[in-house]
Length: 166
Image (cartoon, rainbow, N blue to C red; front, side, top):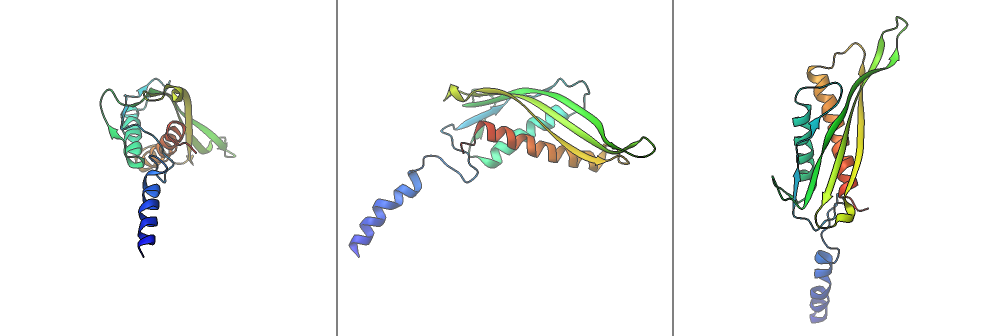
């Protein structure tokens, strides 16, 4: 019985500490803090509040998927950039030459700085879209759903590029 206790005492720490800082989301980092600087909207078509909403969505997603603490300055990890694209375009037409389906595309340019490992720094563009019927206006619940789906995908792609070491 003592042998089992000794083996357990020897092996148990390996399960907790052997892999470093790891989570089931694939996020592996030695960083403790992050900051998300305000994403200015520089797109040709400006949607009021989009810049604020995207900045908050990125902050929330990082907090939800990691144990990193959000700070206003001097973060170990820094995200900044611009919203470069906000475009609504028809994707299919009806016989009457009207849009049967529209697509909202949002694009962002992201600069990521890792103060603990500068080799991981990057600048990349990310974009995603949401399709909706041509009979709908991009207002109210349709706009909320579009933003939610686009932000979910954009923030996940940004996190994967910056923190997921698969």
